[in-house]
Image (tube, rainbow, N blue to C red; front, side):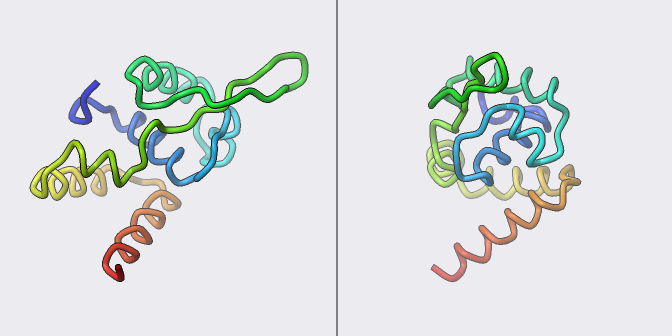
Length: 118
């Protein structure tokens, strides 16, 4: 799966895992970022198959074990390895125009401010 082929929800799930900063189950991610659990499970399966996410542990939830997932790369490494400056500009513009989740927008704005200060 190439980044150009990511759906809005695939980006949202990936960025949410980056924003969480720790491994989460799909259910935990759904609750923390107010996303539909069924949709998150579907997207997580796609991202696992594409080697974007990995299973990093398990946690007991009631009568079953739930997998904890984490991105295989940091957001910085992902963008550095896959995009040139023009791609980053275009992708950022498209992403921000589509993004309606305030938490994720604030997270991205914070990242931008941190990179400017470095």
